[in-house]
Image (cartoon, rainbow, N blue to C red; front, side, top):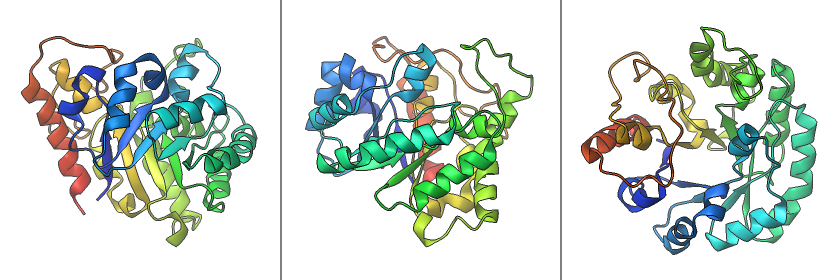
Amino acid sequence: MLNFCHISPTTYLQRYTNTNGAHLLLAHLVEEYPEYCEYYANLDDGKYKIMDNSAFEMFKLGRDMYESDKLIEMGIACKADCIVLSDYPKQHSQRTIDAAKRLIPEFKAAGFDTFFVPQSNLGDMTDYVNCIEWALDHMSIDLIGISILGAPIACGVDESTFEGGKRSDAYKMQRYLSRWNLFKILEKRNLLGPLSEKRFHCLGMVDGPKEIDLLRDYHRYIFSWDSSAAVWAGINDVLFDDSPTGLMNGKFEKEVDFSHCQPHNIANVFSNINYIDALSRIK
């Protein structure tokens, strides 16, 4: 069983996130929406609250990452338990590791657990795995995030459109299989053991909810997983299905509107949430 974190537009947080096993908060939303920050600050459901550093969003926008003092300030404001350390996609792991060495003492001193997101250059799986091994060896790191950006990059899957990169016709399939491929490599390298149990978090889900089932053999190592897919697809009348990935047509490409406040089919959203929750609870 893993703790799934459904991500929702701000208006519907109370409605669509109450089955969450844990919560993932996005730093840029904590900053932009006072009501979002207030909701989580007042939420006392006993579930672990992770504040993401919004690196994925900053990366797409070409913006600088948040400074540590700003992340700590926002973490305190929303009463997070854990803060994601700075990470640098498509760059050698050493930059992300150096940032972690600098930030871990600051975050720990402020009372937060730490969440490390490995990164590497495009196609450098050796560096990516070495980055994960470094994190596993440091018990000051509480969670290790395997992202739907970082894992495909390490596998050589260049899905960028915001940098002018061209997508191959097969990129969606390769992206969908990237985390499964990574866990197979970690297993082969004997990096999955007592020190890695419930240390991983899967960041994002794009090509279909059955990736949860694809990683079934590795659930003992996965503490939590987040995605806005169930809520946002449901709001837009896209239902998960019985296809091999759970989404016959792949990712619903429209960007999430976190200020969305329009009539929609609530039953569709709950159908998708229940679909993911059922997969997450199977032992």
